[in-house]
Image (tube, rainbow, N blue to C red; front, side):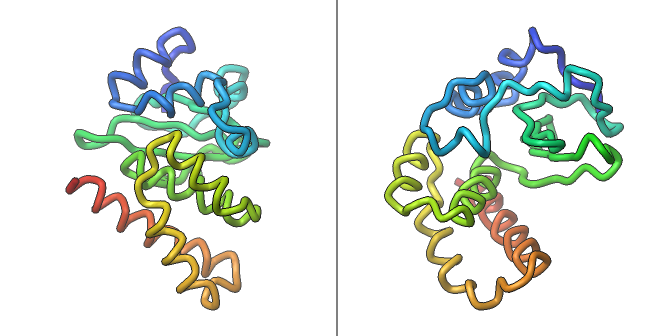
Length: 169
């Protein structure tokens, strides 16, 4: 994928329809301390020698360790992607809407034992509308999420469902 230049990141994110809170986080404004470890830019690796997967242009949001998270246009909407700079060919689509994307971030925060009240405050700040639904589904599925692969498949299904709901709203 071609990386959108650093000087064009904000304008491109806005053109793609990214929310103001997502843009702020991507630019390094920590809206809530809980986001510092899971989604805070600016990205470094995408602009300093990391190879990106082939494909359409994309905007890097941030990186953590060797993983880069970004967004690109996809069939009239968004596509959130992640890849490891160690194997850029194996990029992964993580969501097709910003609400689906936030599902993945809030699931990671839940996995890190962030208290529910903190999750609610953070969700309000970024406009994540499906936190209650996600937490209820998570409680219901907890016994079935014993392995990494079980959890991954479950989360992919949750994201797909939220992507559908968000697209219809």
